[in-house]
Image (cartoon, rainbow, N blue to C red):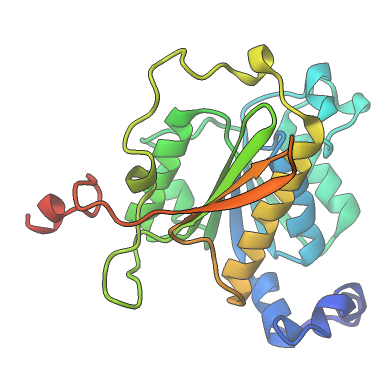
Length: 261
């Protein structure tokens, strides 16, 4: 996919990177990325994907902008209060990069609509704030055979991983699913919501930017993705650690009992 003269200048710092270059930037332009959530994680994620030149960004969020969002959801502003987040975010993308098409999906994703929605995109980035959505999205990505970049925020900590459960590793073992990492959601009420526990605003910016990095790497195919690795960030000590995890033969998506049927 050819770049215009304006795009060549806009992406000049990418084009001189051997790991990206013209072919990589063309892949970014041709890519369709679905972002789940236009909130704390989605705000920096969407902006960096747009700045990088992702050709089409789908936005899934049924919420509206509230004043308490603005401490961390920096794609929105005070004049956007009460607006749908997907509309506010789409306008921000248009201001940042007119070469990017945005498709708003002002809905809540669930097991019934996830697969057909996800199947229309190349990569999915999940920045949702609840386990029901994370499981629905990760299961749908497996069935639609789409790579998933997924992150979560705590009060002062965050996690990030990439799921490519529809593929196998170099040794032929299936890549782990989200359910290999988290077999079941925690009991209801055991994990307090952001409104109750709080969250450090700048941490959302760090984790959302790291999500954008993983998506860009997935599209351009440079570096080593976080497949089978959970990146854990502790903002109190500014410590980054990586937990390795593998395929669970008992998982309900690609486990041995499933493949035997």
